[in-house]
Image (cartoon, rainbow, N blue to C red; front, side, top):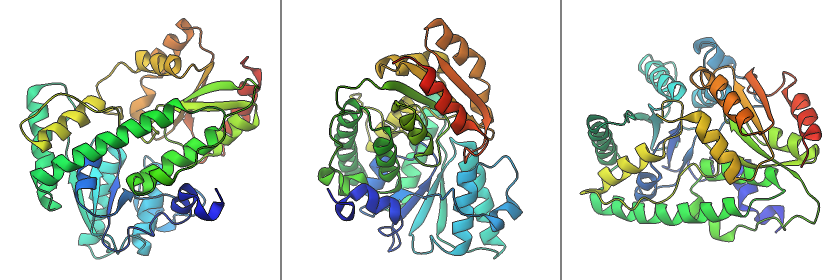
Length: 352
């Protein structure tokens, strides 16, 4: 497939092209794709650009905001999102929640404009009252976006079909980690159901044995970490961050009385973000084994403070599982702090 006909390249070159005429943007993890599909509008996560300076955002955001949030606020102020119908922010991620309040305040003060900012207030504590809160939040957001129960049920069916497609794609991963990182980002920044059938996968790798690597921790800005692994003779075959290829999880068979309750159950069951209740040490080992990874790179940006608390337990679990691990805590989001050099050295040292 030529670059001109490559849907992944098309999205990554102009991620807002399909959204400017009344589309729906979202920010953060756990925004239900069922609802986005049911809206009938184009949709996508607001894109970021690690190469662009963020002078306006830097005036307002504290150092604890990650680079992707700075990039989004900068573009918001510059009017990049003005044509969108609305933007949904998730409260299950600290950065997206705080960014929502900053956007609202800057709009209130007339400093910046842009589309209507909405928030989805999910509660991930595993108890009945939290689930009811989440179901009410999904219902409320559905009403705000003009989606009724019948449309949302249709969105559930379409989302489950997409989940199965993504599972197949993950199972087909091999040597080309860069391709699959770009694919996952394009699927995040757009509605993949609109172009997934035209996707051409890379040809299977030859007989050479690559070092299979699990990339865990924070979401990278682009393919730079994957390319470094690949240049060192390895391949990232799976990721654990919130925007990874498998971010939607698998279809859930449990029946609920309304589509909104089904969506809430799906979201709370599949959540893997910083506020999810899970054994991250056990999870990272399971993900590495499922991907048949020979090694793990645990790359955490300095702003991911919630995940940093789990590093000692994850390190011990990987050691007990005899999985070589490179742990890079407090890393720069742009990976301009020597991380790429250390990743390259690690991958060349790890036996396939």
